[in-house]
Image (cartoon, rainbow over all chains, first blue to last red; front, top):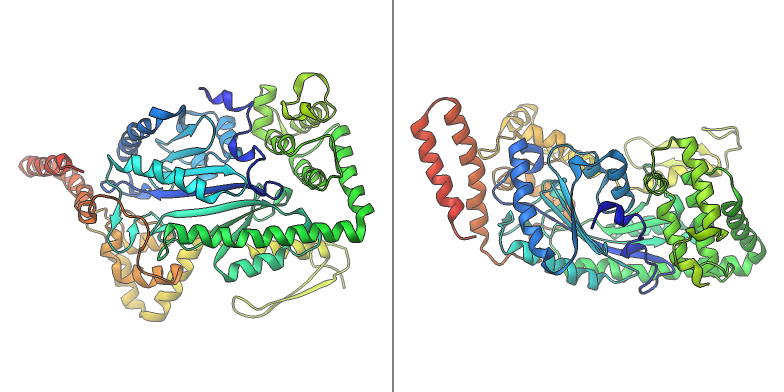
Length: 361
Length: 168
């Protein structure tokens, strides 16, 4: 498998299936691990980093015995390819912009990836479409076990897995669920939801945005505490609260339909109209409009599109993806023109460019 | 009244009570939403660690004690407490042992707990700490070579090989 093979797929987490997938985009867990006999990354020499990469590369190959795995030296990638992996959530922005020997191993179905030499020596992440944290845990726990058979992780009898930052010590685990909450945003209730979550020490952050702005009304809920609770307790904490938020979002959607069906239908239809006809469009505006269209599809206001197709557009209209699809580096102005062209072709079902799912409608 | 950030009328009047003195903001709907979503976001982990530490140390120590503490360094990786404090990142697994006194309250502050109850590797934890000593031995061997103490360097090499070859 090559990196470019990923371009034409959406990957597991945007598949649009799984439980509660009208609101829950994906479930994700990551584990932070370090080798016992090397300094953490901030104190590691160039040689240390190279040796860590080599040791973990060998271990990662052991997982690959049962699956098709793509191993990528991030340090040797072009900028657009690194950005491409960030957009797909296969590596973090820090990993893309970091320095020295570093790598990522990617499962061909994009159900898991392993970052080597990020903030910690190893960051394993596993993901599923929809709400299925237990399924994700089973997978990541297995991967962790296979790696641990042959390497000694830094582990303290009382503090658990040791990490470069004390905020991750203990389980080293971050459980997160990505939600699409457009109705809570429209009805201005999202801040209230945020504040109540923070009180129970869950973190919420917007997705895709620069800094704090949530683009496309995507929000990620995750645990902040990693020590003093078991992995199942941490999973339960998140998976107990998600149905409550789903319920709020559904109520807000019902409210919008009841109180202002026309204006909601108008908003959704206009968004769809712009996406189908614009001649130049920014990434921000695309996200914003796709969010309305996505809700419109879920509420039965748009009939000729499915969720998978929209999820696909969310990712394929991002800068690096667009450049990979059109096959060349583009400046912002040209990107906006190409993005509009791509959207028009896809949504108006011109020639063969629509990526499969929309054709079934 | 106009919004503080644009010409639209200020319809939101917010008094921020967190962080020192109360601050007042007069904002239009759009900027109020921006402000509220921004403040609802968690601070970066580094900033978080540094802030908690700064507070914790300001409470417990005199300036002199602080300066002394900052100079303490880990015998394994060599990171000083000051370096950790300013970066928010530790240098090696042994830091959790040698900076134990300072880290313990920080960890309790972040997690509300001080003991791991989750998954454990199948191998015993003391093996992990023994392997961490390899970081120190490799560093000492490099220093010995640099200083042309070859006898010492070869002793260290044997020691390193012995630990490396232990069953993990």
